Length: 385
Image (cartoon, rainbow, N blue to C red):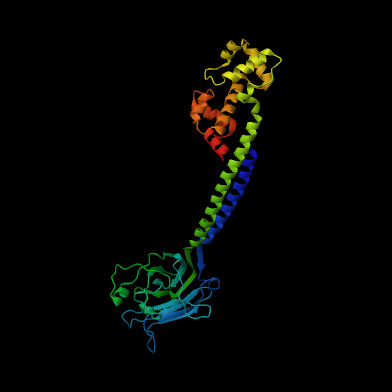
C-alpha cells in the first residue's frame, strides 16, 4: 500500500497545483478592468462628441467644445440661461470597427471609476443612456432610459467611483412616457454613449473647463468561473473514481500478499504441521492451534494445559515463529478471521469475531485494521471485488 499512497500523493499534488493555478487564472480573468481613457488603452472604440440644450437652433444658446480626447477628456463649456434648462455635455460615443455608431453591452460591468478636475468648482452628471425595449426608438437618444449619477469636482484632481447598479433614472423620462416611477430596473446592455454633462447647479455665464482621465469600467465575467467549475468538477471526480478503483486494487493485492505470508499461521493448517522433534514445541503449538477460539485463553491457561512453564513457552514461540504468546495468538485469530471473511458471506463480522476468540467486537475491528490496513467489512468487500 505504501507505493500506492506515494503514487496517490504525487497525483494529488499535481492535480492540486494545476487546480490552484487554473483557479488563479480564471478568477483573475473574471475581474474586468476596461479602460476608456487614455483612448489608446480602450478596448471599446469611441470618439468624442458634444451636445447642448438647443442643438436645433442656428446659434446654440449654450456652447461646449472638446479640447483633448486621447490622453484625457478635456472640454470647456459656457451655459447661457436663455432656456429653462441650460445644458451642455461631452460624450464618449461608441462605434463599431467601421467607425459607425454602435451600441455596446456594459451589463458585465458593475462599477465605473475616473479622476475629475473642474475649474471653477462644479456639480456634474455622469449618464449611461440605454435602449429600453418598451419605449425607446433607435437613434432617438431622448427616448433612451438615462440612468445617471452626480459628482462634485473642483480644481483639485479627485477620484470618483459609482456603482452601476445604483444609478437613478431622471423623473422627466418617466413623465415623458407616462411610466410608473417604480419601474426603476434597467439594463446597460445597449449603451450608445457615456455622457458627462452639466446640472442645474453648474455655473452659468462663466467659461468652465472639465478634465476627466483614467476612466475605467470594472466588472465580473462569470463565464471564467463557470469554465473553472466545468473543468475542475470532472477532473476531481475523475481523480476520486481513479483513487477508489486503484485503492481497491492495491488493497486487494496487499490482502493477497498478507494472506500468502500468513499461511503458516492459519489455524486449520496448524493441525497438519510435521511433528516437531521437541515434544514441548509440538504440544504448545497444537494446543494454541486447537484452542485459539477460546475467548478466555491466555498464557496462564496455556501453561496449565501444556505443562510448559511461562518462560519456556515464550522461548518456544520466539524461536519458532519470532512472536510472543499474545502476538502469535492474535496473529492466528486474525488470519482465521480473514479466511472466514473471504470465504463466508453469511457470517456477520460480530459472529466471526466471536468465532475466532474475541468477545469484544470493537477490539477485534481495531486489531484487524492494524493488521490488514482496513476494516473487516472493507476487507470482505475487497475480497468480493
